[in-house]
Amino acid sequence: MLSPVDDSYCDDPGPRDACGVFGVWAPGEEVAKLTYFGLYALQHRGQESAGMAVSNGERIMVFKDMGLVSQVFNESTLNSLSGHLAVGHCRYSTTGASTWSNAQPTFRGTPDYGIALAHNGNLTNTDELQEWLETSAEAPEVPRKDKMDSTSDTALVTALLTVHGGNGLREAALEVLPRLRGAFCLVFSNEHTLFAARDPQGIHPLVLGRLANGWVVASETAALDIIGASLIREVEPGELVSVDASGLSSVRFAEADPKGCLFEYVYLARPDTLISGRRVHAVRVEIGRTLALEYPVDADMVIPTPESGTPSAIGYAEASGIPFGLGLVKNSYVGRTFIQPSQTIRQLGIRLKLNPIRDVIEGKRLVVVDDSIVRGNTQRALVKMLREAGAAEVHVRIASPPVQWPCFYGIDFATRAELIAPGLSIDEICRSLGADSLGYISIEGLTASTGVSGKKLCRACFDGHYPMPVPADRAQEMGLENNLG
Image 1 (cartoon, rainbow, N blue to C red):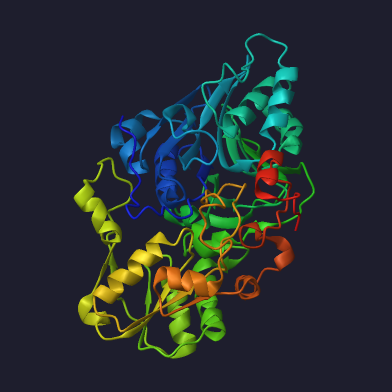
Image 2: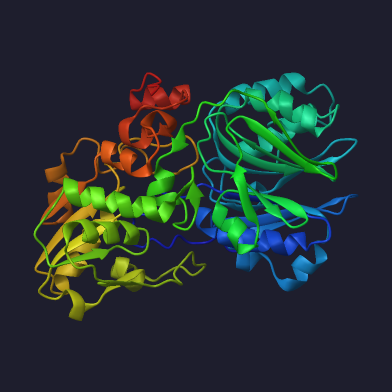
């Protein structure tokens, strides 16, 4: 199969989402189709590959491939995957190459059962875990690093569960999970039981839902909504949940030390998702209101960069009294394409994704609200395009503070050297973009908008204070001394 080509033809792919995980235990239901629609709702979290593992109680069938959920699965495939429990995944790679062998769920077998596993996040102690795996590998059939067909940290966790699975998968998980460092939302199963686990910091969301005759776990509440499941609660940081014929049970493998990802509120999560009891859309509107108070400007219209900037633009318009308008049209079908664009099309840049409505913006002083700036190439092209369409002034407002540090917990930002914010003042960035003014929300304003205490959030991409030590080689490379916030 051809490798997908990135859709960002203006050379600024921006922050890439963490992966999406989904699991369902529901005897009598078409669990493969439930998983398909759950993954469909989580597609924004990963567009490189998709897969699911389905168990009928006797064996686990795994189907996965490169591409979007709708490209990987069809009616015939889903009908062939029958069973009572399923584990699903849609992937964007942050550890391991974008290849079929790294698509998830991963699968390995023990003499007594199989293990299918899906992972959202990124581990920071893979070298330590690899050493543990190799010292634990007494049997010749145990996978070692040079024999593993996958390069992802997910495959490493699966191998560890296999090695330590002699007393059952639950016991193996309770042995392995406390040794993991970094961010992990895991959904995994054997032939009979569905498991879900979340790192002690709860970096990324993981929720538990209820069906009439079963249970669901998913990265976001939006995936519960699409299949008609009711939200029960979040999987707690440091908690292992299991579901089988005996019902649902829970055990804690580590003490909770919540440090939820602040960028989930800014960009990663769907606006209709609930995080910590608040709808993400409402948080983003509040971010816009705060942004208007922190960086007011005289203007004629507030327009969003669709669609992630839309809720904050609504809030900015409400607080400022400046009319809200739709000055840009997004091509919803760009997505990820398998067709390499010609040089002529590449030169069109951002117009492949966004196009201005000249009649709306001509002669207007515009406030343009976007979620974040990474390299700045997208905003630079956007400002130029709006001026060419007749905008009198372009004032850029950003619904997050300057992104200054990389993420080690599952979001693929550019390297620090590629980010525009480090080393430049706000005025210098503004001149680089060609805007009339530029304002970023403060980290205090962003945090207050979420309604969550800053002590319970990971804000490392904005302030460089990491809740867990980063890999030593990267810390030295960036001049960090494991800056713990």
